[in-house]
Length: 336
Figure 1: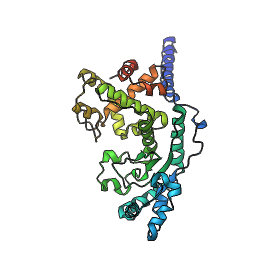
Figure 2: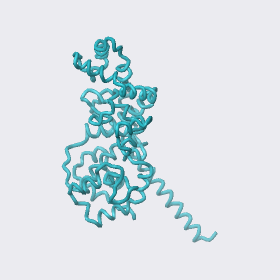
Figure 3: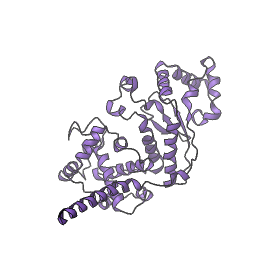
Figure 4: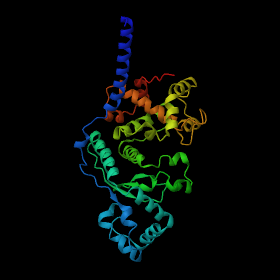
């Protein structure tokens, strides 16, 4: 073999090794000794199991018997009006069907408990000093106003009927759009939990200024979520189908070029905000195959570039409110 050929092969080998190493290093940033953090043991309380098995013959008495263990949900007392409302909820045909589906799909809560514990431990590693409340699962009746994971000030509440994977076309039945029910799967629980932690403990009031700063703001949230659960694929992280994720990755360079070329980075109109951050089945301005919220996708790439090109901790990133400076220091330059 000629010397020139050998040198070329060596260079190619080094190139691919370097690329592979960079990819590993991206995730290596999240390799932390979280196992040493609290909670060492996390027990997820399954409120729906005890609630839906109360004897309806004396429902109020049964509900009151749950107060010692579930005061973070029920409070310290239950009056007749509250008891009648809850009884109507648990005897409703649709709600009972949801409970039966949840009871079958989540018959073993242990795997989810482990995943939730890991997120909480990672959070406590990066942001010590926050006393996270207990975690309780329940049936919400798929309450759009509540959302799938909430914090009522006393407990983190996870509505398991939001994570049924559209079995029995349950989300179609209530009129939920398919682009939304795509995210109603068990693998989204830790993502939604991490978003809650971000919004409750990290997020500071943000006033929309323009497209680029909003991208950076969104990117910070997604990067936080990734740090809480690095095993999440980008499709789950961003709430895209695999096909949509492929479109976003394959068109990243062209998308960025159009943003720059059309002078959209510093645009601040509501219509432009909706185009890049509004939720929906696709982004019509680009393609019916293009996912919505492309501003979220670009924002995550900007933050990843920023963290790769700067010696910055996750805590420092979260504390940095100079969104424009973050963008400028990111050296984000996707190839077309």
